[in-house]
Length: 183
Image (cartoon, rainbow, N blue to C red):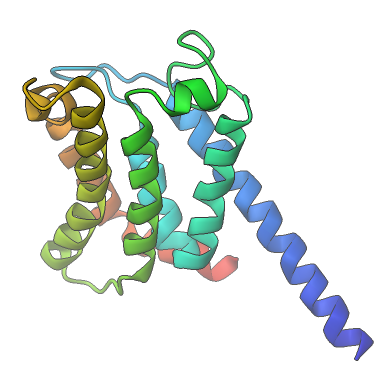
């Protein structure tokens, strides 16, 4: 009985450690701006996909939830923080829908089974990523008004970069899965 308890505790510690590492990776990826057309990109959505593929949906959800919690309580983990504010005030601003979309994206990308079919894998990751933009644009439209060009403001400038990140994730699925086996 004691052995089972120790094994469960060590698994929990291991999962907490992985969630912390994932939330740190998300925070770092939100701060690095890579020159891209038409707007600079961060690698945040790529990391969300990697967490989903590598951790699976349960640990992936825990990791992204931890990241969001860190930002909500005021740690400067979100893109644009602390320059544009921190905590709940920043979270409930224009990016809230996109940040909440991370949860659905990590869940969907963590639930999918991936095989050697690059085209099918690409479309699975494309579908998973689309939830970031669906929730993001829904929140943005609610916030600034639907009479504004929501798609042109909230998705169009980022689509080329998103396709690039989805392609990278698609071609690295096998590597991500190998790393996952070490976990």
